[in-house]
Each structure stands twice: as structure tokens, then as C-alpha cells.
Image 1 (cartoon, rainbow, N blue to C red):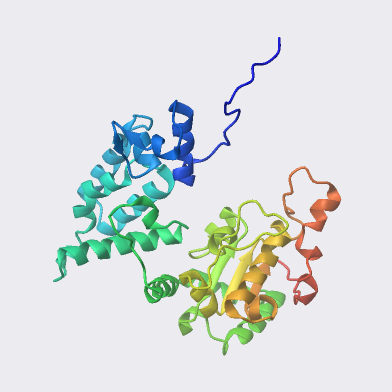
Image 2 (image 1 turned 90 degrees about the horizontal axis):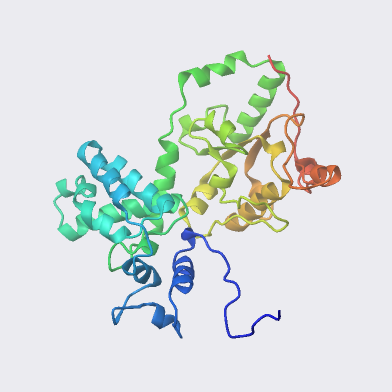
Length: 344
């Protein structure tokens, strides 16, 4: 039996809730019949809504935020303002609330409590709380303005963003137990340690000099063993899927770029298990933000771990392709100074 021909949509590309308006547009297209333009999809009860998301919410196509409201309400009874802010931005970034503005309006008094002690106007109190939320969201790769919590844009100055990044790193304390590990190094390890420290500055610990070092790792497990360690993907804004032309999403004007410009030392654990393209992308990014053509813009970077452990994971790859993705096959490999040390 021949198929009927007509003017219909055969397939709509799938989307994720994190894509915002694109996701809600797809939701409306799948449920609203007879619309002849995008504006028709935004009309509910003869009223033009401000967004596809609002239209979908008023049509009952989205679930309620009751569970999220209960969560914030309970936390607001006993949590400090900073912790409440952390919970709120986590909900915004990962839980996709249907009405972020309503959630903010319901609990904004609790989230402004610390700032209300200052001798400033109500608007300034609210703005300070929103700027702190914006700063937290920025560290998660999100923009507070996409949630439309208020009717104006929240903007962080470059100086505020930069100082936040710097202060967070300088606030990290290295335990006495970690510092005492120096005395337990074997001869090869002590030689490498002294050489690296001489490269950094005058045989003194970087943190004690109020200089910045960044601890990162290729895996979350390895990062968790470092003081305030972060994965390389999180620290350098690398994509999860490393492709041939992978790039770091670091703007030259961002606080992270300013932090990387100031950084004296970077420690990268588990380097052999990450695709060489990721490390090459960091090299290009550092050269760009520092406007320097030297490898990694001349920064001191320590790559560690054992090549006899896990190699980079390349889906459906041959042995040759996996080996080619390894760090030793990178154009950077000949530029590294290699040290072999024995475990105690």
C-alpha cells in the first residue's frame, strides 16, 4: 500500500533541557497543533507569553517544582547563606527547575540575609546576593541571566571575577601531613622535587609565597586526592568528548583566563590516560590567553603518572589508534623533560 503524501514534519531533532528555549520549542511543536508561526506557540489564552518555556509551563506541559521548593524551604530553616546559595545554584544548573524566578522570589529574603546586615539599600542587598549567585554559576559554566531571576541583567566586573578566582586558590591550605612528605622522598624523587622547586622560586613552597599553583587530574578519583584538586575537564573547560580539533572554552576576558595568567605552576596527574588532543588544546589555550608562543606559554607544568596504567579510551578504536592518541605521540612529547623515579 503506497504511503500517503502530505505536508507534515517527519522528524524533530532531539534536544536536552539544558538547551533552554530550543528544548521548550520542541516540546510545544510536539503537543500544539495548528500553529503556523513561532508566535502562535507562545500564545496562551489569547495572551502572548515572553518565552517558549513560559508557554509550555502555562499549558501544563512541565512538571511542578514542588520537590525543589521543599528542598530549599527545609535548607532555609537552618543552613547558612553561603550554603543556601550553593544549593540554589546547584538546582539551577543541574535540576532544570520549571520556574527559577518563582523559586528565587520565594526564598530571596533568606538568600539575602547576610547582606541585609550591611547599611545599604534593599536593591544593593539583592544585587550583592545575585552577584554571588552569578559568580557561583560562572564557575559551573552557567550564566545567571539565562534563568531570568530578575528583570535586568546581572553582570560581574572583570575585577570581581578575577579576585574571586585568586582568593579561592590562595585560601587553600596544605596540611602539615602533606608538607612532611618531603622528608620521605627517595633520592630520585628528591632530585626532581628540588629541580622543579628551583624552577618555581627560591626553594620555598609556592603557597607560602602567596603564588598560585593549580592541582588537576585526568580523572575525578585522582583529583580527589589533591588539596582542592579539579579534573582537567573542569579546570580548563575541556569538552567531555575529545575530538580532533578540541578546544578549551576559556574566554580571554574571563576570570579563569586571568587566573591562568597568574598561575606559576600546574600539576596534572594521570596525564598518560587522557587523549593527547586534550593536552594540546590546553597548550594552545595558554599560548592564546598569555599571548606567548612558547609551549604552554612558558608555564611550568608537571605531568605525572605511570604509562603502564590505563591508556586513553578511544571508542571502537584499533590498537594503533589508541597508541596514536597517547601523549607520547603528541608534538609536545619531545619538548618535555622526563624523570623516572622509583616508589618507596
